[in-house]
Image (cartoon, rainbow, N blue to C red):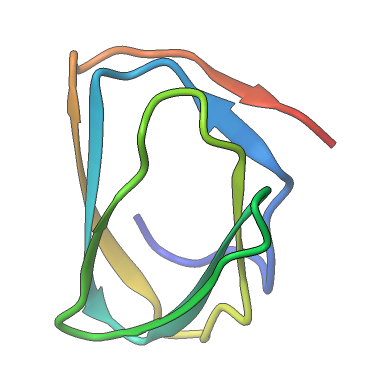
Length: 79
């Protein structure tokens, strides 16, 4: 996944597991519990099912490797 914006909408998903690895660049991961995580190349994170999150402070060179189980899942825009 390559960056196309500086921040995303708030979303949630129904995947059993959603694993992300930051290949390049940097970003901030925020959740609806007001937790903020500053991530850079080499960092990894998992977003649990139904957790509301968004990405912000997305660098122009951000590249993520995303792995999900199952391979197809639904993402809902919350706000």
